[in-house]
Amino acid sequence: MSERPTIYESAARRRRRRVRGAVIGALVAVLAIAAVAGGIALLLHDGDEDAAAGTASHLPSPSAPPAPPALRLSRLRDVEVHRGEKATIRYRVLGPSGAQAAVMLLVTDAAGRQVKTRRLTDAAAAGQWLEAVVPVDLEPGRYTYGLRLGSSAGAGVTPSPGASSASPAPGASASAELVVLKPLPPGFPGMKAVAAAKEWIAGRDGDVAFAVVDTNGEDAGGYRAHEPFQLASLSKAIMLVASLREDPTPDAATEATLTKMITESDNGAAYTIYGQVGSKGMRRVAKAAGMRDYEQGEGWVDTRASAWDEAQLFVQLEALVPAAGRSLARRLLSSITPIQRWGIPAAAGPEGWTSYFKSGWLGMDNKLMVQAAWLEKGKKQWALAVMSDENPTRSDGWDTQKGVTALLLGQEPTPAYLAVVLE
Image (tube, rainbow, N blue to C red; front, top):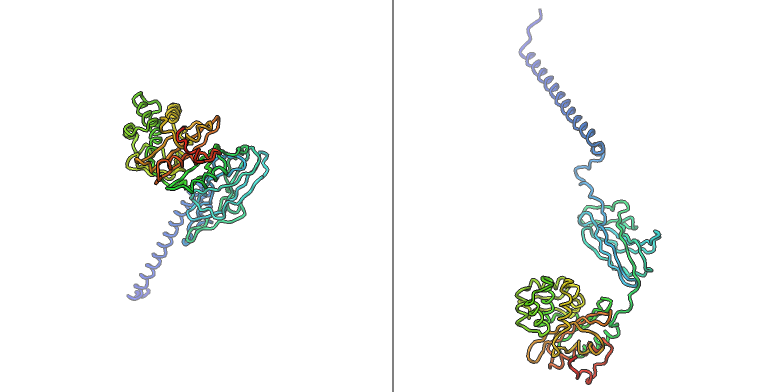
C-alpha cells in the first residue's frame, strides 16, 4: 500500500491541473480564431478574388496612407479659330488637391500626323480651371488637339509641400476638335485710325475716354477704355434691352413708353420702364453683355460703366434682344430726334453709316456727355463709345464725340468740320 500524499504534494498536483487547463483553453481559442479567419478569407475569395489577393499581399503599413488616385484631365471643348488668331484652350487637371502636373499640347491633322506640339505648363495644379492662349498658324481645316499629363509629356508630377504625391494615369490625355478657318480680313477701323483717335483725344480738356469693337468683332483698343463714367440717359439703352428681354412684343402702351424713352430721351418714360425692369433687370443685361466695369446705381441715372462696357453692349445689342423684339430695338435706336443727333451720328451719317445709338448728358452746361452706337454700312458693323466729363463747354462735349468718330472714319476734325454739330 502506498503512502497517502502530503498536503504539499496535493497542492502541486492542483497547480499542474490548472496549468494544463489554461493551456488547453488557449489552444481552443487559437483554433476558434483561426476558423473565423479562414471563414472570412473564404468569403473574400468567393466574393472578390482580386480583393482577397490584394488583402494578402498589398495592404499598406499602418504608417503609410493609401496612395491617392491618379491624375487625369477633364473633358475638352471643341475650338474654332481663324488662322492667324489665338485659340483659347480651357482645361482642368483632376486629382488630389495640391498635386501638380506638366501639360503638353499636341495637334494632329485629319490623317493623324502630328503638326504641332507645345508645352503649356510644368505645374498645372489639380482642381483649378486653367486657360492657355495659343497662336494658330495652321492651314484652314479640321484637326484634333489633345492634352497629355506628366510623364506622357516628358515631365513628372510634383506635389505641393505637405500634399500626397500622385501620378498621371498611363497616357492620361483628353482631346477635342480644332477647326481652323480662313484668316479674317483686316477689321475696320484699322490700327492707324485708332492710334490717330487716341492721340487726338489725349489732348482734349476734361475727363475723356473711348473704346472700339471693329467689324471683326474684336476689341480694337481705345483710350482709358475701362474708366467708369456716370451713364445718365445712356442707361436707357440698357433698360430698353431689359424690357424687350422680358417681353419682346410689348403692348401698345409699353411700346409708346419705350419710344418716348429712346427717341426723345424722356425721363418720365424712363422711370416707368425702370419701375418694370428694376436694377435686377439692368444687372442681368450688363452680365449678359460681359460689362466688366459696370456699377449699378441706386437708380438708372447714377449707374456707371466704361467706354469698353458700352462698346461691348452695343456691338451685341441686337443679339441680346430676342428675335421678336429686334426690329423694334433697331427702329427706336435709329430714330433719335434730330436735335439729339450730335457726335457719333453727325460724323458717321455723311459717310453712309446708319447709327443705332443713345446719348446721355447732365446739367445745363452738359459737363457730362456720353454716347455709344453700333454703326452699319452694308454688311459691315462695328461699335463705338465716346465718354466725356468735366467738359469746359457743351461744344467741347459735342466736338469730342464727333472728332473721335471722324478720325476713326478717316476724316480730319478741323474747326470747320466740327462746326457742323448735328447730322
